[in-house]
Length: 109
Image 1: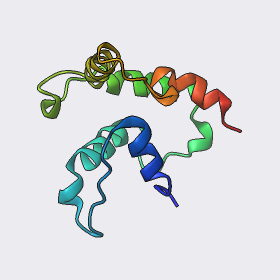
Image 2 (image 1 turned 30 degrees about the horizontal axis):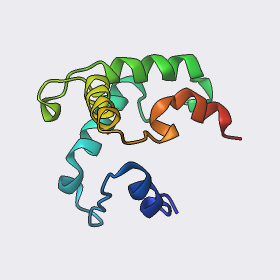
Image 3 (image 1 turned 60 degrees about the horizontal axis):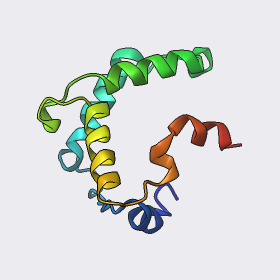
């Protein structure tokens, strides 16, 4: 059910969704790399009940400002800004989820 709405997401964002084969971590290198980066902050033994929203926001900000080789040494934040600016200049509406992720989080039950 995790990606049950992948078709709606693809239509709304014009982003293709791909699924890796089971037990094939080499097919999802960015995901595996990101998991490793997150484990620097959040080890497996961590009790997540002790992690505050403020701490998660700090971790997200640090990771989103870290340059990535796969983005030609841009940060994820820079890359999103470039993509959004390109879509706006082309007259393409930006889905709400890309406009303000904090609003989406607050709107969830």
